[in-house]
Length: 162
Image (cartoon, rainbow, N blue to C red; front, side, top):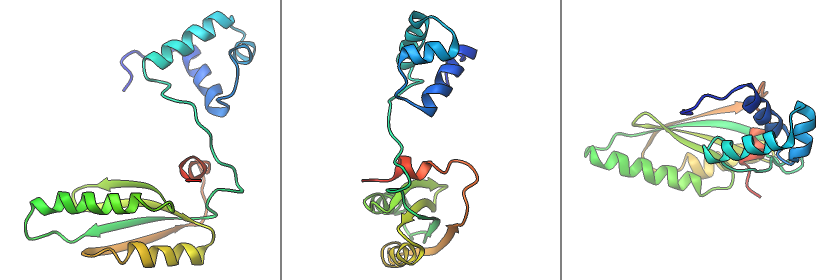
């Protein structure tokens, strides 16, 4: 968490930059009706504090995956407990190597959650079947196709590989 709280001006600057990271200091200054020197100083401080880590792009509709699914994998608990961490690392690394896998996270000791994207539902499900469900020693694979995103639809454009 942030060691120094953000004030209203910091939040306003961040809100504008989240919408469009290409905004110039002059444009931000005009929109917020604050001097350019103040905006410049604040952005510099936000960067120094690690609040702004980097500026990036979000890929648009033509290049985003058209279909998404959350995939929850549960691994079989090995006889030797020490192998579980290594196997979880192996599975997460394997999943991370596929461009179709947009996000991978461990959940607890034995579960992995992945966000997977594809051109269409058939290709997405085929990819999951051939590349994820075939990973050895999985206890279960739950595929949750995403039918409608209510918030954060640009996340796939942010995570997608080109």
